[in-house]
Each structure stands twice: as C-alpha cells, then as structure tokens.
Image (tube, rainbow, N blue to C red):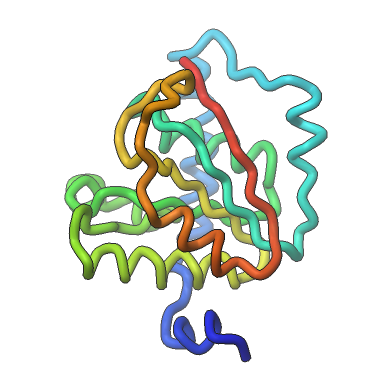
Length: 175
C-alpha cells in the first residue's frame, strides 16, 4: 500500500443518490437546452476524451461563470457516462444548495488549512476509486479561458504530484 493509500484509508467518496442524479440529468438536459443555443466540442476533443475506465480521471477546467457546475455535470454525463461525477464547491454555497451534495459535489472550506487538507484527502479518495471523474476549477474563482494571468490554487499541483497513474484532462469552457 503506497503512502497515498495509507493517508486516505478512512476517507471514501461522498455518497451519491443514483435516483436523484438520474432525475437531475433529465432536468439538466432540458434546462440547458432552454438557456443555451448549443453545447459544442470539436471532434478532436471528443476523440481525446476516450480515457480507459480503470484509470483515475482529473478534469481541469476554467471557471468562467456560475453555470460551470451544471455544464460540468452535463458534460461528464455525456462524455464519461460510466464515471461518477465529483467536484468541490465552496462549503458556504453547498450549505445553501444542499441537494448538490447528493449529486457528487463536496464542500470545501476556502482559505483555511483544514479546508485544504480535507479537500486533498477527499479528492485523493475519489481519484483512487474506480469509475470516477473529479472536475476541478484550479483558479478557484471566475476566470476567462484566455486569462493566462489567473493564479492557480495549489491543490491541483498537490493532487497531480500524488497521482501515480491516471489522466489529467485540461478543459476550456466559454459561454
């Protein structure tokens, strides 16, 4: 058992309600259709999204809008339907929208050592589990895909450093 596994042995991915998530996916498809003209990806991007199911998947996306949690959940279901979606969300926001906790979102206390430690343990547990996808927005704030000056939070680098195998998929979103 490597050090990553020993550290996280008491942590498991947050529980997800399959029933609620299936209903959410049906709602989400209709909701996004009402608010967007389309959601499009290049064919080349779709081919590159072919990740072996038994490998950890970390998706790193920019954070241009409050729509991101919804579009990320939708895209995960369309691109990686065999993988359970997980994503961190500000703990304060999760308290306000508690239903997200049953859809794969987990709370993070921003700007605290305890919050960072909990985030890393929870994220590593998710990445060590089979058939999961962890979606991160490393800026931790709204940022345009073309903003190369946006500072990245250190959690992404810590996770990648401890990921002994798997896939890291950069993902640019624009509305």
